[in-house]
Length: 96
Image (cartoon, rainbow, N blue to C red; front, side):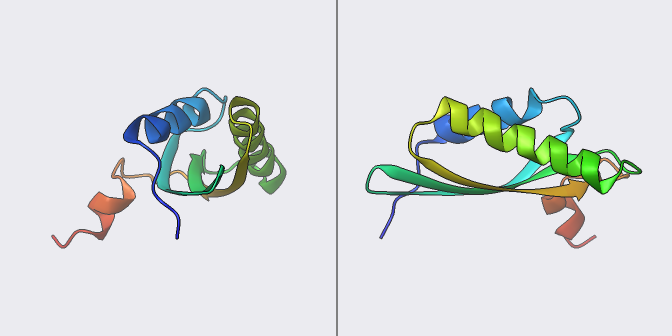
């Protein structure tokens, strides 16, 4: 069974993702370290109304930036449209 990386890892991942033009937010970041490899899944938010090709290019750029920063990492980046109300996914899911 794997272990979660240190909190600083998640901060760095968020910083890397947000450094990519077009990446507006990051959420659902999940990582597990198994042996020497980190397995990472995450969602990035992109502007509404852009093409699927543009969204895919942003997700690919986030993927590439993370892979360049870490030697042994497996990454999946999913692109979501940016939330229009400014709420984070956790805030949106909370009962009102």
